[in-house]
Image (cartoon, rainbow, N blue to C red; front, side, top):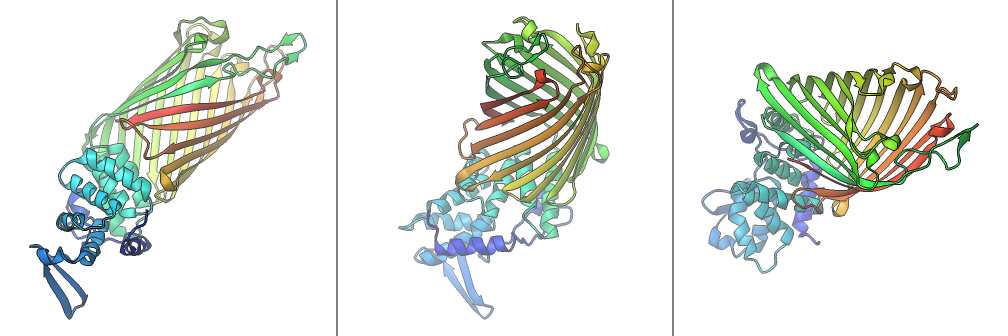
Length: 477
């Protein structure tokens, strides 16, 4: 789409200045009052003044302005960039009456007016479409985040404001964004999310290469399965004095295969605890209990039954080091008990760390390191696992987004199995996900993922690799 010359110039100036905004508000102003981007010098009472110097100022009535398309465009573009609602309300009708119009500018103005009129859901949809076309226009991200905030779409608004913070350089704008983030964190409401993926498993039982043998022992045959994986989660916070909060967490996830029901499973967890949060930091201590239902695998039946339970405590800490770097840590301890396979009873530990880098609003990277340990009664089932992972998420032109993740882990078991082998595995994982930001229905964006997994083991029965392609759909309420 060809934009007016003045629009291209305005974008270049605005972005190169890193969206420097003049913020003038009382010290105790709310985030809504505190955020006031610099406004163009458009006077009230339907009169526009333009000046090239302090000595030369031109006053013009609304009727005269309607005859000057050049002045309308010169006034409308800065008003859109700087979120000047009053100026847009004055100039947009005049611009629509011009013989030649830019559909992008018209849609932008209508989105801003929809926000001003309280039509937040409509405004969000319009801003998403605009931002998919021009993600380099930073004011659009703010206006989208602002509309999401007003529409109580807290998780999406928080994501956009965090990305926006990576773009601005002046302390006052960062302080303003932090106030929005604090306000979002303090909102007491249920946060619900869920998703579903269509699965095509060519090796659901992780079988090695066909014909693998160890002496007289022959490895199991590969099995296929087709079905769905699903998850649902809900979280509720209750704000307490001194930035403390109480927290309830509910999570459920499972897999259902219609043509191989022996591998169906479902896990449910409930946790309740306390936490502390600011705009940059959140700490939560949550005791939990978890139950797992499983059909039993290759030796099981088609009916799921209670398989195991796990109870313990989890600690989560996230902290923004600055506008572009975030570190998060999770610690978890659990006592695990099995309904029939008593030799697996024991405890487990998890220590997970992730460093997030947000160089600019359309891209982020993360690197993580994890350690988990399973202590079981029989040592051939007990192990330690060390994992490193790397991820990259990118917003591309034309509304395309991608996510790439790679991981490598080493798993070492404590004891020998019946064949006299103490298992040591090298585990590789790669995932590539693609989606279009402007393709969604009912707030759900479909994503397609290719996944590759390889297990390189000193135990011949546990060497395998497999590819999967699946369609994922998720939504946050």
